[in-house]
Image (tube, rainbow, N blue to C red; front, side, top):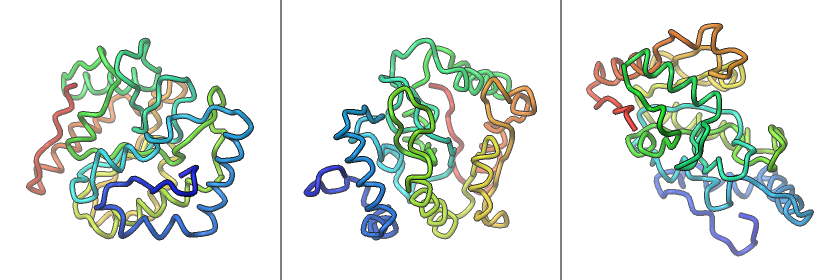
Amino acid sequence: MLKENTAIKIDHSWLPYLEPEFNKPYMQQLKAFLVSEKQLGKQILPKENDWFSGLNSTPLDKVKVVILGQDPYPTPGHAHGLCFSVQPNVKPLPKSLLNINKELETDLGVNNQHTGYLQPWAEQGVLLINAVLTVEAGQANSHQNKGWEKFIDTIIATLNEHTANTVFILWGAYAQKKGKMINRQKHLVIESPHPSPLSAYRGFFGSKPFSKTNQYLQQHHKSPINWQL
């Protein structure tokens, strides 16, 4: 995306809905911003070929569950394009991810404390997508309001219209704002406070999103997610 002659590598299932976005003014402005940041010597995370990992790991026709995050981890070596996920062998795990693992163990008895690499979830149909797909190293939220949010809105609108009985897991006020466009007669929306240590005790713990997700999927004749990593 940063080079003029570089083709955008997004799974073909998404292209009819997302390819037109890349020619729109907001996306051209986002591209100009990212090029400028790179020219200034700033480190952009994750690596460019991981920006669309969520879409490439979970094709549109395979999506059963959507977990919406905010922006990538700003620590080099952590983010790889899937929200909340860290690369293999990252220790200690980020605190929000530790709390996700705690709730999973309480909810379903699944112990994932050994890893934060969520790629196996993505390959089962869990779209792990942030509202902002890039960040400057060491500067959380530094790429907000640069255009990514509009692109993600298009993804959510596409899922809302072109999938059925999808589970949207929205943790925290930021994600829940994005949920306003979701048809709740057609999909299940699970909302709770964010798993961050600042808010997890206000209702994230005990919210049972994982068992609720699998129960809904099975009710609609879809295979449940194996959350064990």
